[in-house]
Image (tube, rainbow, N blue to C red):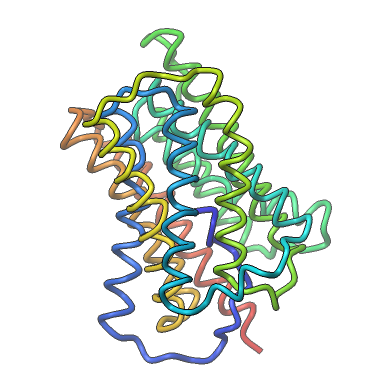
Length: 304
C-alpha cells in the first residue's frame, strides 16, 4: 500500500519476531485488499469510492490521534513532497479502483505490484541507485510472472473494457512507483502518522471536484459500505501497519505485505467467480516471490 510502502521508518533495530506483529501485518495487508470488493459491491463511480476512502480514512486517523494524545504531530505543516504524494495517492486509488471494474481483480493487483520494479529501474538510471545482478534477476522474474498472468499473449478478446482496465492498472502502477520515489524526498524526522494523515487529506481534496461533478445517489446501504471503505483500507490497515513495523524487521513486513495481492486474487475468485488458469496462478506466485525476495535483498543491502 502506497501510504506506508518505502517510508524510512526510524525502527532500524533488530526486533524479535512475535505473533502480534505478524498478525497485525497480515491484517493490514488483508484490509488493504478490500477496496476492490467494496467498489464492486456498491457499484458507485470510482471517484466516489476513492473520495470517501481518503476522506473517511483521514477522519478516522485524526480521531485516533486525538484519542491517543498525538494530535500535536498534525501541527507540522506538510512539505511539498507530502503534498505531491497526496495527489499521487489519489491518482493511484482511482485508477486502481476503475481498473478492477473493467478487468479482473487479479490482473489489476498484479500489474500494480510491478510498481517497485518500475521504481527500481528508474532509480537505477536516473537517481544513481545501481541495481546489482540479483536485482536485475528479480526484475526479470517479476516481468516473467506478469507475462504468465497474461498467458504470454496480449489477447483483448474479452472486449475493450479489458484493454482499458489494463491501461488504467498501468496508470495506477505508475502513480504507485512515483509515490515510492517521491517518498525518498520526505525528511525522515516527519512522523509517519503526520505523513499518512496529510496524504489522505490532500488526496481527498484532489478528488473533491470529481466527486462533486458526479454527485451519485448514495443509498443508506452504500453509505455503510463507504464507511467500511474508510475504516478498513483507509484507517485500520494504516494503523495496523505502523504497529507491525514497530515490532518486525522491515524485510519481514515487506514480505507479509504480499498477503494483499493474495487476498485480492482470493476475493476475486471467491466473491466474483474470477477463475485463474494454472499458468496465471504460477504468474501470480512468481510476482509475489520476486517481490518478497526483493524485500529481503534490500534489507541485507541496507544492513551495515
